[in-house]
Length: 424
Image 1 (cartoon, rainbow, N blue to C red):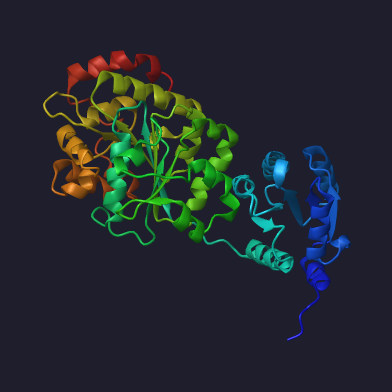
Image 2 (cartoon, one colour):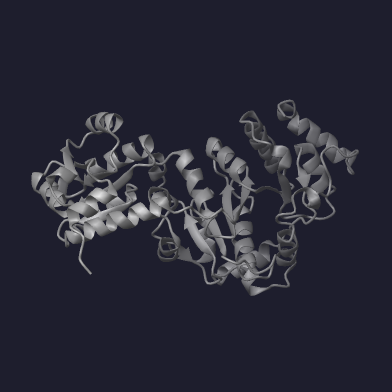
């Protein structure tokens, strides 16, 4: 078979307007040769203003950004800017694969692919052809669901619930064996508690996922995400929380929505998270939201304040379900009472207080859902899992139904929650 000249391939790809942002002329010349000639690429100063003017005047098919040597930091900032301003633009990093940190910086900056300046020039056109074909493919309809777990403060057991629920569902003991599996988004505070409870380590974080959003596929997820023994995939917050400043709320929610293409269910642990704007966006994007609370005065008041803040952000909290954790029977304050006062639907399956059993499993580096399936906590969690996807059908006591069953407690709660009740 006669091989098509590279110049013709480039023309077919429509790459005559490709730009190369680099301070090194030799790198521009190498790329021009790889693309079929100097007419196939235009060198441009690697700064946001110059690129912005050129892209605005004549949109290119692709922009190549130099990450070699001292240009890595500048390239990362430039890529982040272009990704925000022109999200559909094809961005490709160039540099030397031997410079491992530069390559990693490029991928984390969100480029679509990376070209090794020391590699065969002939591979560049094939890579562009592959990327072009991928852009034209129709993405599959999102098939998974997202469950968001909210907790108004740390220490309410949200991470413990999230980890046990994920393992239970993944193993098929709860709501049936998932087709594509379960992902746990470990985004609550204290950070990375989910990893701790699962006895795992992870070098790939939620921020890395956002940076690689455009190249996210099944292969990347299988290789990058940490996986628990149960098969649950785990995506935690970064160890250095200052990295979160580099990603927007919109991109973070976009990652969560994109992952529904690869998992049947993802459980987003947002317990104790203080960034309420982000919590509001995730809650609105989720298919189902469970608010985790216990019977303590502090937890109830903090939960009322959280819900009030979310209402102020136009979040439809009336669709949320209350999951009462650490239920102590006989105290006269049940799930229905608390849910009614908070304006939520009460779960029909509160979780019993099983601190000693949970601690015993943790001491073995395991989850209670793994060590004792007959434990009352695990049994209640399995029953709760079976309500997933049923919406309001599992309502055990709507906020508008009748008087509370325990008048003294209700009167006390009315006093505690008075500052927030008028803000529904």
